[in-house]
Length: 368
Length: 226
Ligand SMILES: Nc1ncnc2c1ncn2[C@@H]1O[C@H](COP(=O)(O)OP(=O)(O)OP(=O)(O)O)[C@@H](O)[C@H]1O
Ligand SMILES: [Mg+2]
Image 1 (cartoon, each protein chain N blue to C red):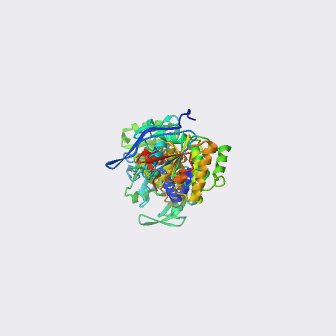
Image 2: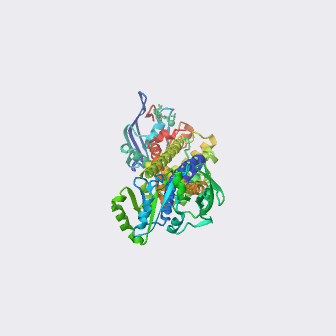
Image 3: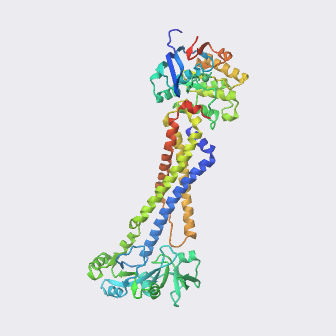
């Protein structure tokens, strides 16, 4: 019975219904897109770090995981690590930021050693560096920049020749020979990170501890690959987490305000009808129930539309967006976001509903 | 039936409206008994307090002083929630404006009154007979705007009595109707009173309408004048 009334009310003002639901859909899609982007991008970074095949990573002392700018590790450290009895192979990379790319950088590697460590870069087309201006990109980078073997890629005002396209997931999306990057970064003989693969990976923790305790290495950061990967979670980025919270908060506030406005006008418009219900003996709870039901339908419809919308943004992002950001589906956030949207909308209905309930029945009945 | 207690008992009822600085005494000590099964008409000139009496009896506004008992319940002591509950169970009301919910069909308008009172929304065969007598049983699936004023008022009457109230209160129920439709509605009220014993208190300023009732009382200046 009530559903009939609520449904007729929603149908009576289709544009208002549509706009309110759309506002909630955008709220939900905004949250899911942001969470999907941060989770997806962090996951991808994590996967890339693990893809290196190293057990231990050594980094300059004071850099954050997302910055690759510090090309400060002396290259001779690689030899030092290589001589340690536990170490099977050690190699370094230098990173140089790509202008205009969001947190993207090109990695200079010793291709032979890096390939041994990471089980080989898998070439989808082309092959290793041949000429001085050769560059290797991963499939995702190639796709977004529409590159293939033989195409020219302009970076740092230089033209590079794409000599190979590799499977994504290993350290970086763009590879150059180590000396080339060292020159670009004006840091000859320096590295940004050193990767160590052990003969026996189960000794990782022991070796990390030994290296950390070595006073000569005191100014460097020594991390097991698991420690490094764990930095690529939301816990490693308090600022990002705060940013997400702020956006979620804003989304909920927008949903709240739109529903507040929409239900406020609905209640005003239906003053007389609410008076009629009161004249039939409807209690405040009964009238509240009708309005809350209406909001519930609006917000659930809006949330479902928002989830669908977030899948659309995901597809758009991953098809047309840059290679640096990866949006993933976050189904475990769906119920949470839906509940948030519903809670915000119900809260927005509270004031109009109170107003409706408090309005004098006689006055309401003489309202036109 | 002098032994059975009156279904409505009003004693020295006063109602003062405080509009602006000047208090308006709309009811100045009304006393009135309505017996069970009676069809009573209340007439009087404009501003004599008829509607005010209707609003107090239906619990839409509180009394200022005096006592009102409806079917054993003293309503002067009730708070707003209590007065609202009164309309759900004891008092059915019909207005001059039909006051149907525009988005619902006639049937749904009647059903929602049952729903509000917590009853199963489907009614029994006895009420179906009432709908037949009211001549709206074939109009049930129409929305108010597709019905004539007379039909809408008959739906409103059906809605007012669907919960078997102790009393049906009507304020100028034919005020918006033409002569022909007024006669239909008034005959129906009389028939309803005679066949089902429904107690009715009808307010009107039209003596012809009052003639359909068993008894007529006159109001003047907030008092019963006879
Ligand atoms: N809400 C109100 N606020 C202030 N004064 C009111 C209010 N309602 C009614 N009155 C006054 O109370 C008096 C009685 O009004 P009431 O509506 O009861 O008369 P009535 O007999 O129904 O008249 P009519 O035949 O015109 O409907 C009038 O003087 C009116 O102005
Ligand atoms: Mg009146």
